[in-house]
Image (cartoon, rainbow, N blue to C red):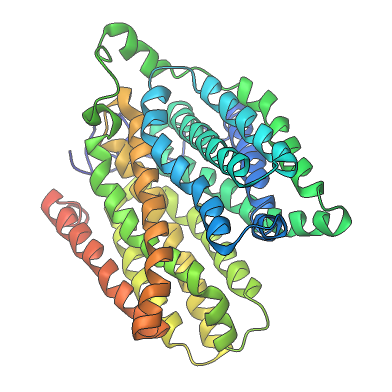
Length: 411
């Protein structure tokens, strides 16, 4: 299936159609975004707290690393199963189970007596996160106007980014007040999202297909767990997030090397540019085509990350950071919408699970490779090498756009 025409999911952009007319900011959409801010706020409030908390519990470096990695590992493993479930059950159920599990684990951390109970809590919390995230994404696609799909996904992503920007500082501030306060804050934020999650509407399109029998048979075969239509956009996204993961691993060293007083400058400029870019460019992806917006975004991402590695002073570094944020804002909503376009209506949850699985895999791969390559060839050279690796995704996306006629159709 190609961009620019109508697809089984009913959401691909159509030339000449005014995509701004259907309402996006309905009460259910606002509730979903608020629910997302609360859950991701609960998560990020603990992000700067947990490494210190684990170390204070007499954990060695290997144990701390295992505890920090367990959350992501559980989230990635559970994601495909959550995707299948989100196509078969009400998203409110998945989101509620995710919020309850997340809140219970956040509240239990201070009382866990040792490494193994903490590891169990991290695994359960990672699985709970996957349930919520996948259910929320499936619900978002169901209730948003198909003509504004990329825009809806952009604001969903912005809700996550807003929580990511504010919650860590709030968690640190509360830790200075009382050591256990961030854990209570995290649990209460997740529980506070419950009333919003319970009002999430049923996915009518999936319900109709489910009743027609098209979802019959075992849902746990590999072909059902992974949505093939989302694989190409997902791998393109992984090539992009590979650089994000590398930047997250390298940011403390890079900001110090460029003369910035704090890595907070990098995160602040990047986040502001990202949020603004998503708001502006996502309607273009709905109106003119996914690849038309994603391809320049991937191009600018590679160039801006290379510029970050080569920047010689704080001003050029921050300028490159702003370009990086602008480019990243173009890419994810466009490719995420493309993944939805290429999947059947009854497989939207599986499509989102597959896409976000590959998105997070790219981040993990970049975070893993950067320290090893940095030690071997130097961090600047390692970042440039990863830019070259991400260039393979750019070539594949360009070839796909040309083959599909997405570029010729708009010239």
